[in-house]
Length: 152
Image (cartoon, rainbow, N blue to C red; front, side, top):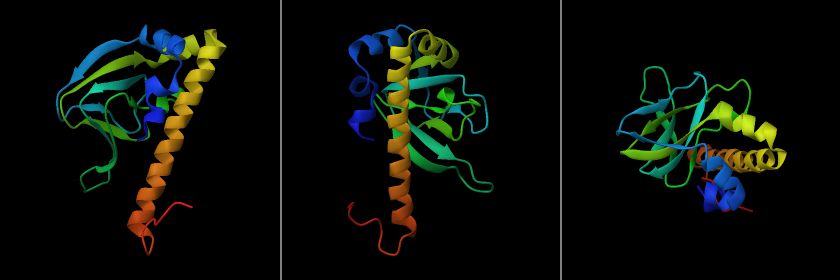
């Protein structure tokens, strides 16, 4: 993931501070599940240390890893869009320290402060767009006759 989608790069200091005022530090052991596909998306995280994988469960197989996230990256964006259900799962691949946010509290602050809400929406949109682009490249590498080739 590019650094443009990390919280520090995407949010102005005033918006970072407002968001971080709602944060609480949490830890996950390696192998801990942060969330499961189809369950309620009521929290999200920003990785401080360690790595988290996003995965897709496939019946009869191990979960397919879709993305690996590290320092400063947003874990979870489904909390921002109704119906607030996870589209993937997430697992700590190493011991993880992260800042955890209550999604309802952040959405309430977004509604209360439209400038903050816009900044959060643009940030989450950048994350979604980058992850969709990365997924497209991976699919081309897997299924295109000659790989993804160069970007035009």
